[in-house]
Amino acid sequence: MQKKFKIINSLLLFFIFCLVSNLVLGANDKLVNLQFTRVVEQALQNDYDLKIAEQDIKISKAQHNEIRAELWPKLYLRAYSDYTSDLTTDQAEVVVIGDQVFGDESKFQTATTLKLNYLIFDSGLWNDKQNFYEKEILKQKLNKQIIAQQLKIQILELYKNIWLNFEALSTQKKLLVYKQESADFYQRLYKAGKISKLKVADAKIDLKNSTLETMYLKEKLKDQLQELAIYTGENYHTSQILVQGFTDISADSTKLLNRPDIPLEITQRVDYKKMETEIAKKRLELEMLQKGNKLKINLEGEYLYYAADYTSLRRAWANFLPKTWVIRMTATYPLFQGFAESAQAEKIKMETKKWQLKKEKLFWETKLFYQTLVNKIAQNKKTLQHNQKKYLELSKKAYMLARLKKYKLIEKVNLWEQKMGIEQMLLEQKKLIIKTQADLLKYFLFLEG
Image (cartoon, rainbow, N blue to C red; front, top):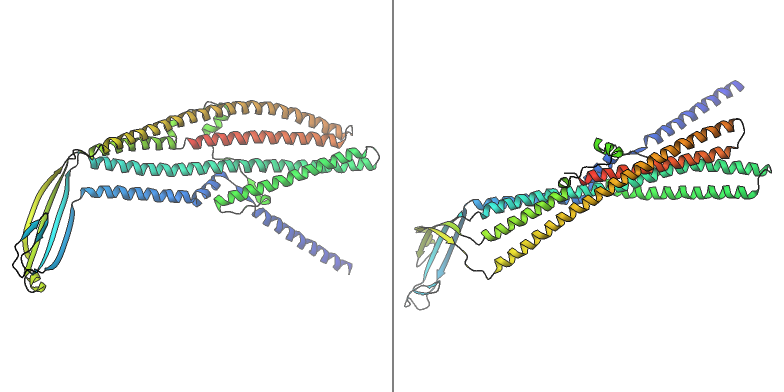
């Protein structure tokens, strides 16, 4: 009986072990690796501003096609039928007043006119329009790139804060273990009558503060992940994520960590290219204004079918025959338009100057950002070197304390305090590296072309 009980007990333990193992494996399967490139891809796919920008590009292309259509001849077909009743019983004469003709008899009449209009010469206005809308398409494409760039920078800032908070939370959990052990250790010493109750109270307060800090960091990370979910459409949980680093930083940025000499290439910035495009559009707009008030030559043609009958519209249609055809060439040259052209030209010149000033402002902003970043990298480099030396000293001290603890020459709490100092030092190192990498990546995002 005891043997059967042992077998059943063993099988039950094996079943529980398998169940726990499956649960652990299942929990591991749910672990989400946050990757910056993947998060950015999801945000770009879900962003409505980018979808709207794509529609703006299509609208600009449609406007460009509309301008191209001006080169084709225009054909118009006009048809009408009417009945004129002479109230003077055919005693009136044909009278013309202005462009109105008054007939002398009652009759049915019908006519159809086919008209042709073709632009022969416009002083180069069409070419300027063509170039203008090509620049407009380019501007809308650059605008889409700017929206994507700004979104990437927003995601970068959010991802950096998530990464910083994730590392801080991981470190805080380790510190919490040490502080819990310290509090328990002091409690045992107090019960043994070796220390006062004040020391135990201090340890418990420190533990409570550390617990509250851990809870605060969890809530903060939860809020940040919820904000990230708005961009990506994913669901994140603080206990099921693992934040990866910026794996997509280029080789140049790695060099910059050791040598802060970033090349300033302002012309690569998308917003700089957009400003240059705006200036080019304004110059074309001024040329279009000037050429719009110059000579235009059009070729026109008309082919007229006409018929009339005194008794029936049907008979009029039965006698429907060609009547006349006309070919004419018209030349138009505006002489005076009330100084509207000069006022419009002045407005365009002022707008061009505004875009030039914006371009200069962008240059100085980029230069300032560059200089600030270089100084920050240099300072971070010195801080990292200083902290590395300090970390080595703390590690040596921890090793010595571990040996002393082995021979019971010191208390455990001294070793734990030293280890907590090392953890805090490592966290500061990680924070500096994360912030430096984020600044570098932000700079390269600014220079995306």
